Image (cartoon, rainbow, N blue to C red; front, side, top):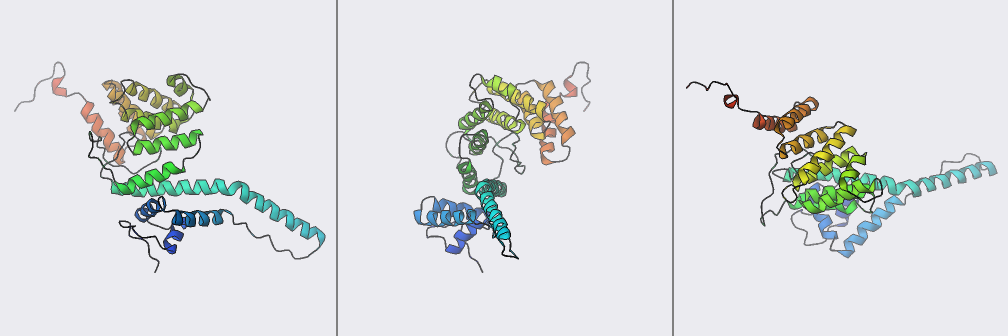
Length: 310
Protein backbone atom coordinates (compact mmCIF):
# COMPACT_ATOMS: atom_id res chain seq x y z
CA UNK A 1 0.00 0.00 0.00
CA UNK A 2 1.45 3.36 -1.01
CA UNK A 3 1.84 5.77 1.87
CA UNK A 4 1.71 9.51 1.81
CA UNK A 5 3.01 11.91 4.44
CA UNK A 6 0.71 13.13 7.13
CA UNK A 7 -0.51 16.48 5.68
CA UNK A 8 -0.45 17.95 9.16
CA UNK A 9 3.15 16.89 9.99
CA UNK A 10 6.06 17.15 7.56
CA UNK A 11 8.88 17.49 10.03
CA UNK A 12 10.66 14.52 8.35
CA UNK A 13 11.46 14.09 4.66
CA UNK A 14 8.70 12.66 2.41
CA UNK A 15 9.40 9.16 1.13
CA UNK A 16 10.53 8.57 -2.44
CA UNK A 17 7.10 7.08 -3.15
CA UNK A 18 5.44 10.27 -1.91
CA UNK A 19 7.67 12.46 -4.10
CA UNK A 20 6.86 10.24 -7.08
CA UNK A 21 3.15 10.65 -6.37
CA UNK A 22 3.66 14.43 -6.27
CA UNK A 23 5.28 14.40 -9.73
CA UNK A 24 2.54 12.13 -11.11
CA UNK A 25 -0.25 14.24 -9.61
CA UNK A 26 -1.63 11.44 -7.41
CA UNK A 27 -1.50 13.15 -3.99
CA UNK A 28 -4.59 14.52 -2.29
CA UNK A 29 -4.82 18.35 -2.23
CA UNK A 30 -3.96 18.45 1.48
CA UNK A 31 -0.94 16.13 1.17
CA UNK A 32 0.18 17.91 -2.00
CA UNK A 33 0.12 21.30 -0.25
CA UNK A 34 2.18 19.99 2.69
CA UNK A 35 4.77 18.29 0.48
CA UNK A 36 5.16 21.45 -1.61
CA UNK A 37 5.57 23.47 1.60
CA UNK A 38 8.34 21.04 2.62
CA UNK A 39 10.28 21.02 -0.67
CA UNK A 40 10.18 24.82 -0.81
CA UNK A 41 12.65 24.78 2.12
CA UNK A 42 14.41 21.45 1.43
CA UNK A 43 17.01 21.57 -1.35
CA UNK A 44 17.47 17.78 -1.32
CA UNK A 45 13.80 16.94 -1.93
CA UNK A 46 13.43 19.85 -4.35
CA UNK A 47 16.29 18.45 -6.47
CA UNK A 48 14.66 15.02 -6.55
CA UNK A 49 11.33 16.43 -7.69
CA UNK A 50 12.86 18.71 -10.34
CA UNK A 51 15.00 15.87 -11.74
CA UNK A 52 12.01 13.52 -11.97
CA UNK A 53 9.91 16.21 -13.63
CA UNK A 54 12.62 16.96 -16.21
CA UNK A 55 12.98 13.26 -17.02
CA UNK A 56 9.25 13.06 -17.72
CA UNK A 57 9.43 16.00 -20.13
CA UNK A 58 12.50 14.57 -21.92
CA UNK A 59 10.94 11.23 -22.83
CA UNK A 60 10.95 10.69 -26.62
CA UNK A 61 8.61 8.19 -28.36
CA UNK A 62 10.37 5.23 -29.96
CA UNK A 63 10.67 5.17 -33.75
CA UNK A 64 8.15 3.01 -35.63
CA UNK A 65 9.36 -0.52 -36.47
CA UNK A 66 11.12 -0.90 -39.83
CA UNK A 67 10.24 -4.04 -41.69
CA UNK A 68 12.86 -3.79 -44.47
CA UNK A 69 16.30 -2.36 -43.79
CA UNK A 70 16.77 -0.64 -47.11
CA UNK A 71 18.42 2.79 -47.37
CA UNK A 72 15.04 4.30 -48.13
CA UNK A 73 13.30 2.78 -45.11
CA UNK A 74 16.19 3.63 -42.82
CA UNK A 75 16.13 7.22 -44.07
CA UNK A 76 12.36 7.42 -43.55
CA UNK A 77 12.71 6.01 -40.03
CA UNK A 78 15.42 8.54 -39.21
CA UNK A 79 13.24 11.38 -40.49
CA UNK A 80 10.28 10.12 -38.43
CA UNK A 81 12.41 9.85 -35.30
CA UNK A 82 13.86 13.31 -35.83
CA UNK A 83 10.39 14.77 -36.38
CA UNK A 84 9.06 13.06 -33.25
CA UNK A 85 12.00 14.33 -31.22
CA UNK A 86 11.46 17.84 -32.56
CA UNK A 87 7.74 17.73 -31.67
CA UNK A 88 8.60 16.65 -28.13
CA UNK A 89 11.19 19.38 -27.75
CA UNK A 90 8.85 22.04 -29.09
CA UNK A 91 5.51 21.03 -27.61
CA UNK A 92 6.39 19.10 -24.43
CA UNK A 93 7.00 22.29 -22.38
CA UNK A 94 3.73 23.74 -23.67
CA UNK A 95 1.69 20.63 -22.86
CA UNK A 96 3.45 20.24 -19.54
CA UNK A 97 2.67 23.83 -18.55
CA UNK A 98 -0.96 23.41 -19.65
CA UNK A 99 -1.32 20.14 -17.72
CA UNK A 100 0.27 21.60 -14.59
CA UNK A 101 -2.05 24.62 -14.73
CA UNK A 102 -5.11 22.38 -15.14
CA UNK A 103 -3.92 20.28 -12.19
CA UNK A 104 -3.29 23.37 -10.07
CA UNK A 105 -6.78 24.68 -10.85
CA UNK A 106 -8.33 21.32 -9.91
CA UNK A 107 -6.37 21.35 -6.63
CA UNK A 108 -7.55 24.90 -5.95
CA UNK A 109 -11.19 23.95 -6.53
CA UNK A 110 -10.79 20.92 -4.27
CA UNK A 111 -9.18 23.09 -1.58
CA UNK A 112 -12.23 25.37 -1.35
CA UNK A 113 -13.88 22.74 0.87
CA UNK A 114 -11.55 23.95 3.64
CA UNK A 115 -13.07 27.45 3.50
CA UNK A 116 -16.22 28.41 5.34
CA UNK A 117 -16.91 31.38 3.05
CA UNK A 118 -15.73 32.57 -0.34
CA UNK A 119 -13.20 35.37 -0.32
CA UNK A 120 -14.39 37.38 -3.32
CA UNK A 121 -17.92 38.72 -3.58
CA UNK A 122 -17.96 38.80 -7.37
CA UNK A 123 -17.73 35.89 -9.79
CA UNK A 124 -14.32 34.84 -11.14
CA UNK A 125 -13.35 33.07 -14.35
CA UNK A 126 -11.72 30.30 -12.26
CA UNK A 127 -15.18 28.75 -11.85
CA UNK A 128 -14.71 28.01 -8.17
CA UNK A 129 -17.54 26.26 -6.29
CA UNK A 130 -20.12 28.62 -4.82
CA UNK A 131 -19.87 29.56 -1.16
CA UNK A 132 -21.53 32.28 0.85
CA UNK A 133 -19.54 35.50 0.91
CA UNK A 134 -18.13 37.04 4.06
CA UNK A 135 -16.25 40.37 3.97
CA UNK A 136 -12.69 40.19 5.30
CA UNK A 137 -12.19 40.97 8.96
CA UNK A 138 -10.53 44.23 9.88
CA UNK A 139 -6.98 44.13 11.14
CA UNK A 140 -5.17 40.96 12.27
CA UNK A 141 -7.09 37.82 13.07
CA UNK A 142 -7.87 36.42 9.61
CA UNK A 143 -5.21 33.71 9.25
CA UNK A 144 -7.00 32.06 6.33
CA UNK A 145 -6.83 28.38 5.58
CA UNK A 146 -3.37 26.93 5.10
CA UNK A 147 -4.37 24.27 2.58
CA UNK A 148 -6.30 26.72 0.41
CA UNK A 149 -3.56 29.36 0.65
CA UNK A 150 -0.93 26.79 -0.34
CA UNK A 151 -2.96 25.86 -3.43
CA UNK A 152 -3.30 29.54 -4.38
CA UNK A 153 0.43 30.15 -3.94
CA UNK A 154 1.21 27.16 -6.13
CA UNK A 155 -1.02 28.60 -8.86
CA UNK A 156 0.76 31.95 -8.46
CA UNK A 157 4.18 30.27 -8.68
CA UNK A 158 3.25 28.78 -12.08
CA UNK A 159 2.43 32.24 -13.46
CA UNK A 160 5.90 32.96 -14.78
CA UNK A 161 6.78 35.70 -17.21
CA UNK A 162 5.21 39.05 -17.98
CA UNK A 163 2.72 38.12 -20.69
CA UNK A 164 -0.90 39.00 -20.08
CA UNK A 165 -1.86 35.41 -19.17
CA UNK A 166 0.76 35.28 -16.41
CA UNK A 167 -0.26 38.70 -15.11
CA UNK A 168 -3.90 37.57 -15.16
CA UNK A 169 -3.10 34.46 -13.11
CA UNK A 170 -1.00 36.41 -10.61
CA UNK A 171 -3.77 38.95 -10.21
CA UNK A 172 -6.33 36.23 -9.49
CA UNK A 173 -3.97 34.59 -7.00
CA UNK A 174 -3.41 37.84 -5.11
CA UNK A 175 -7.15 38.45 -5.08
CA UNK A 176 -7.82 35.02 -3.53
CA UNK A 177 -5.14 35.75 -0.93
CA UNK A 178 -6.98 39.02 -0.22
CA UNK A 179 -4.10 41.18 -1.40
CA UNK A 180 -6.49 43.61 -3.04
CA UNK A 181 -4.09 46.34 -4.10
CA UNK A 182 -1.64 43.88 -5.68
CA UNK A 183 -4.49 42.06 -7.42
CA UNK A 184 -5.77 45.22 -9.10
CA UNK A 185 -2.23 46.17 -10.11
CA UNK A 186 -1.55 42.87 -11.87
CA UNK A 187 -4.95 42.75 -13.58
CA UNK A 188 -4.67 46.33 -14.80
CA UNK A 189 -1.19 45.53 -16.15
CA UNK A 190 -2.65 42.54 -18.02
CA UNK A 191 -5.35 44.74 -19.60
CA UNK A 192 -2.83 47.42 -20.57
CA UNK A 193 -0.47 44.88 -22.13
CA UNK A 194 -3.04 43.93 -24.78
CA UNK A 195 -2.22 47.10 -26.70
CA UNK A 196 1.34 47.49 -25.35
CA UNK A 197 0.76 50.95 -24.03
CA UNK A 198 0.29 52.95 -20.87
CA UNK A 199 -2.22 55.72 -20.52
CA UNK A 200 -5.46 55.80 -18.61
CA UNK A 201 -6.89 52.49 -17.48
CA UNK A 202 -10.30 53.60 -18.74
CA UNK A 203 -8.92 53.69 -22.29
CA UNK A 204 -7.27 50.29 -21.91
CA UNK A 205 -10.54 48.76 -20.64
CA UNK A 206 -12.53 50.27 -23.51
CA UNK A 207 -10.10 48.80 -26.06
CA UNK A 208 -9.67 45.37 -24.46
CA UNK A 209 -11.08 42.27 -26.15
CA UNK A 210 -10.60 39.81 -23.25
CA UNK A 211 -13.96 39.28 -21.60
CA UNK A 212 -12.80 36.94 -18.80
CA UNK A 213 -9.92 39.21 -17.81
CA UNK A 214 -12.23 42.22 -17.66
CA UNK A 215 -14.79 40.36 -15.53
CA UNK A 216 -12.03 39.40 -13.08
CA UNK A 217 -10.74 42.99 -13.00
CA UNK A 218 -14.26 44.13 -12.18
CA UNK A 219 -14.40 41.69 -9.24
CA UNK A 220 -11.01 42.98 -8.01
CA UNK A 221 -12.17 46.59 -8.13
CA UNK A 222 -15.25 45.63 -6.11
CA UNK A 223 -13.06 44.00 -3.45
CA UNK A 224 -10.83 47.10 -3.22
CA UNK A 225 -13.89 49.34 -2.99
CA UNK A 226 -13.09 50.64 0.49
CA UNK A 227 -9.65 51.85 -0.56
CA UNK A 228 -10.44 53.84 -3.71
CA UNK A 229 -13.57 55.89 -4.38
CA UNK A 230 -13.16 55.31 -8.13
CA UNK A 231 -13.29 51.53 -7.83
CA UNK A 232 -17.08 51.01 -8.16
CA UNK A 233 -17.13 53.11 -11.34
CA UNK A 234 -14.13 51.26 -12.72
CA UNK A 235 -15.76 47.94 -11.76
CA UNK A 236 -18.85 48.88 -13.77
CA UNK A 237 -16.74 50.02 -16.72
CA UNK A 238 -14.86 46.70 -16.81
CA UNK A 239 -18.02 44.62 -16.32
CA UNK A 240 -19.88 46.57 -19.03
CA UNK A 241 -17.04 46.00 -21.51
CA UNK A 242 -16.87 42.31 -20.60
CA UNK A 243 -20.64 42.05 -21.07
CA UNK A 244 -20.38 43.69 -24.51
CA UNK A 245 -17.76 41.14 -25.56
CA UNK A 246 -19.37 38.02 -24.13
CA UNK A 247 -22.59 37.81 -22.13
CA UNK A 248 -21.28 35.48 -19.46
CA UNK A 249 -22.59 34.85 -15.97
CA UNK A 250 -19.41 36.33 -14.50
CA UNK A 251 -19.87 39.63 -16.35
CA UNK A 252 -23.60 39.79 -15.54
CA UNK A 253 -23.07 39.10 -11.82
CA UNK A 254 -20.25 41.61 -11.40
CA UNK A 255 -22.09 44.25 -13.43
CA UNK A 256 -25.11 44.02 -11.13
CA UNK A 257 -22.86 44.22 -8.05
CA UNK A 258 -21.12 47.32 -9.39
CA UNK A 259 -24.42 49.09 -10.07
CA UNK A 260 -25.55 48.24 -6.54
CA UNK A 261 -22.32 49.64 -5.04
CA UNK A 262 -22.94 52.85 -7.00
CA UNK A 263 -26.45 52.97 -5.47
CA UNK A 264 -28.06 52.94 -8.91
CA UNK A 265 -30.72 50.67 -7.49
CA UNK A 266 -33.20 50.62 -10.35
CA UNK A 267 -30.46 49.69 -12.81
CA UNK A 268 -29.07 47.16 -10.36
CA UNK A 269 -32.47 45.48 -10.06
CA UNK A 270 -32.69 45.21 -13.84
CA UNK A 271 -29.15 43.83 -13.98
CA UNK A 272 -29.86 41.15 -11.35
CA UNK A 273 -32.94 40.09 -13.29
CA UNK A 274 -30.79 39.96 -16.42
CA UNK A 275 -28.45 37.63 -14.57
CA UNK A 276 -31.34 35.31 -13.71
CA UNK A 277 -32.06 34.92 -17.42
CA UNK A 278 -28.66 33.22 -17.69
CA UNK A 279 -28.81 31.32 -14.41
CA UNK A 280 -32.08 30.68 -12.62
CA UNK A 281 -31.31 27.69 -10.39
CA UNK A 282 -27.71 27.64 -9.12
CA UNK A 283 -26.58 28.91 -5.69
CA UNK A 284 -25.34 32.03 -7.51
CA UNK A 285 -28.94 32.60 -8.62
CA UNK A 286 -29.99 32.43 -4.97
CA UNK A 287 -27.50 35.24 -4.28
CA UNK A 288 -29.05 37.25 -7.10
CA UNK A 289 -32.54 36.71 -5.69
CA UNK A 290 -31.34 37.88 -2.27
CA UNK A 291 -30.03 41.10 -3.82
CA UNK A 292 -33.33 41.59 -5.65
CA UNK A 293 -35.28 41.22 -2.42
CA UNK A 294 -33.03 43.70 -0.65
CA UNK A 295 -33.29 46.25 -3.46
CA UNK A 296 -37.00 45.88 -4.20
CA UNK A 297 -39.04 48.76 -2.77
CA UNK A 298 -41.45 47.97 0.02
CA UNK A 299 -44.98 48.32 -1.48
CA UNK A 300 -46.17 49.68 1.86
CA UNK A 301 -43.82 52.64 1.45
CA UNK A 302 -44.89 53.60 -2.07
CA UNK A 303 -47.09 56.70 -2.52
CA UNK A 304 -50.79 55.94 -2.36
CA UNK A 305 -50.33 52.55 -0.71
CA UNK A 306 -52.56 51.46 2.14
CA UNK A 307 -50.84 50.21 5.28
CA UNK A 308 -51.64 46.60 6.11
CA UNK A 309 -54.36 46.17 8.73
CA UNK A 310 -53.36 44.32 11.88
